[in-house]
Image (tube, rainbow, N blue to C red; front, side):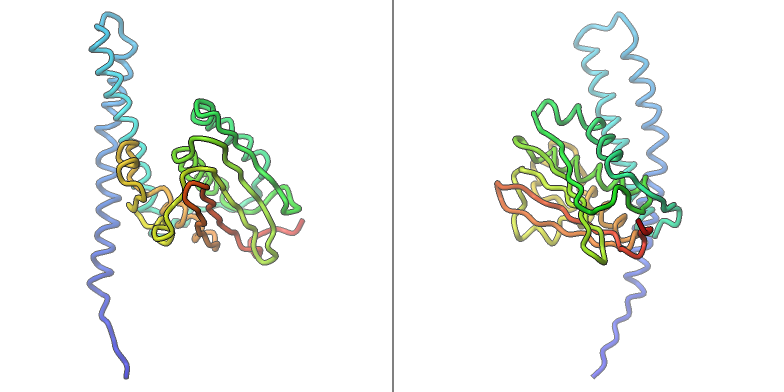
Length: 243
């Protein structure tokens, strides 16, 4: 017995969804840029009462948050269509980690968290689209900081033979087992109340997944409640230059 399913309409709706997200993201950027610019100008002005200055600061803070969310939506829409603009080249692991630790210092230091890394791959560099892989690490580190109150975050780089593996491991609250398979879905949030309070739309890990897949790799999560989470992703050995 052979069963055929016509998925034409489903694909059409999926294409419409992607086009809508891309278009709405683009249209919202212009007014938000104006709001951010005017609020920055007002913050530099003298003469406002403390209460009014606090209102302006909140406007500026929320406009920045909305702008970041729109950037993420636009990035996700572009990645889902298979962004062809990835330029592969050597990435220095140590330099990338050093830059990331400095970039996240303002989020790490208030919590007393340490960002460390270990390289057991036998190579200082790997081949990837540097801008995209940096985005992967940024999203994973930001998630780890958000859900970790004590301890730290460790990033591992190892050689599996056919693949290179990268791991971002934290000592945070962990993810329930039933949610592990879904954390890479767009708009899926494990802790909905906490995510809503921090403004996250739940697409950071979806972006990670699409970037890794565009590199020919795979990504998965391991976690234990109250003991932390490890997000692993790989890059194929075939894309790496010989050392």
